[in-house]
Image 1 (cartoon, rainbow, N blue to C red):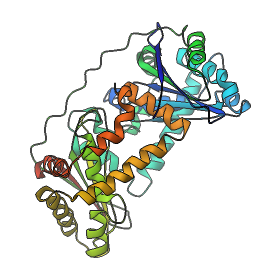
Image 2: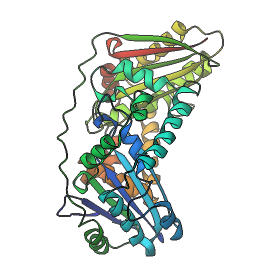
Image 3: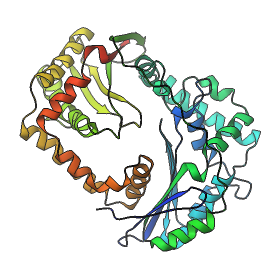
Length: 411
C-alpha cells in the first residue's frame, strides 16, 4: 500500500509525496509530460537530446552532477515516446539540494552553441553505437516505421534520422525547452524519509517562482486500424536470423491492459511459458523467444521476437509462432496457468514497492496518466482477469491483418 499526499502549486506544478521512514534517503523525481511523440517529424530525437542537455548546466549552476555528489547523491534520467523522467536520490537531510537543482534547471538552461555541440556529439555517437553499429540495432527503426504510418510512435526515442540532431539549431532547441519544460507540464514526486508538509513548503520555496508557460495543445494524428498484413525482409551482418512480429493493441489506461499484459506473460514469462516450452524446448526452432507489450499512453504494440536456430527457415519459424498464438485464440488457458502468471506479476508489484525510488517514479507516472488514485488497486485488477478474458485478448490482437512482420536475415 503506497500512501501519498498531493498538492498543486499556483504555477501548475503537481506535487505528490510518499513518506517512508524506513530509509534515511529520499528520491526527488521530476516527470515532464513530453516524449518523442511530441516531436516534429522532421526534427526527431529532441526529447532524448534534452535528457542530455538537462545535465549540461545552467547560468547559475555550471555543473549539475557536482552538487549532487557533494551531498552523497546519485542522479539519472530516461526518455520514452510518452514522457521524460529525471530523478536524484540523496540523504534525506540534504533534500533541499535536490530541490534547488531541479527548480533551477526547470527555469532555464545555459543555452549556448558550445553546450549544444557537446551534447549533440554524445547523442549522435549513441545513435551510431546502439542503432547503426550494433548487431540487430536498427530493428526499432525498421519495425516502428513498418507498424505505424501516421502516429509519431513510428520513430523510437533516439529519433528517426541522425541528421535531425546533426542539423538542430540553438533556436529550435530553445523553443522545444520553453514549449515543454515547465511547471504546468510536470509532476514532482518525492518519496523517502520526509514529511509531506515540509515537502510542500520546499516545493513552494524553490519551484513556486518558476514561471508557468504556454504549452502547445497536443493534437497527435491517430493511427488508423491496420487492414492487411505488412512484411519487411532485410539482410544484415548478424550471426543468426531474427524474426519480429508486432500487433497493434491498446493504451496503458485501457481496461484490457491487464489481460494483454498477462497474455504476454503466458506466452513468454519464464521456462514454463508457452513459447519457451513449444518453440525452444520441444520444436527447437529458436534459441530465444520473447513476448511483451509497451504499455504506451496511445495505442501501442504487442511484440513477439525470436532468434532462429541454425537450419530453421523463416517461414517455418513464423508458422510455429502463429500456431502457439492460434491455440490461445481457440482455447482459453487453464485457471492454474493463469494464476501462475498472476502470482508472478503481483509479487513483482509488491517487491517493487519496497524501494523508495520505485515509489517516486511510479507515483509520478500514475499521476501523469490520471491513475494515481488507483495505484494500490493494480494487484486487484490483475487478479480479476479470467481465462476467457485472455482468450478474448488473443482473438482481438493476433489477427493476421493486424500484424507487421520483420524478417532479419544474415548476409
